[in-house]
Image 1 (cartoon, rainbow, N blue to C red):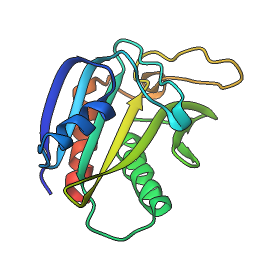
Image 2: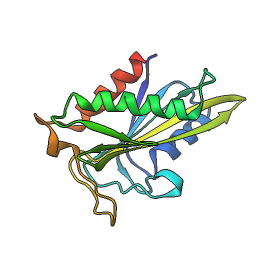
Image 3: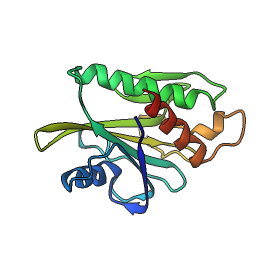
Image 4: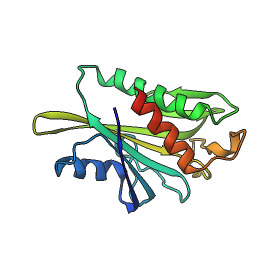
Length: 169
């Protein structure tokens, strides 16, 4: 499946932007990326701290299978893990349901939402990756990806790796 790419300077949340686009009839499989998120979303209504220079994106497409949300979540974590592993010296661990860790520290969060538009279901996969900075969160160790890379990375390389994996799957 091919994905259309849409890039923004600033949005409140890439997932919220995806919801708006779907509800306005923009249902082509799409990947949204932004330089800045002013109200990034995390699990259970938590906030995703979106530090400048990191990667914020959402992917959406129509759900056509009857897989459970748990299975879809696992598949998305695996796709993103495989996409990012090629850049890293260290092993990535998945902390269920949807965090990616290096050395027991969170560097990537994934937020999935399912919405219905004209009786069809769409999945939105929000991905926040600490590429160059990580927030200080009490009682929750965080890190950033470039600290563990064997060579220089940038947002475009990481974005394209994830896009390619989704287009193959």
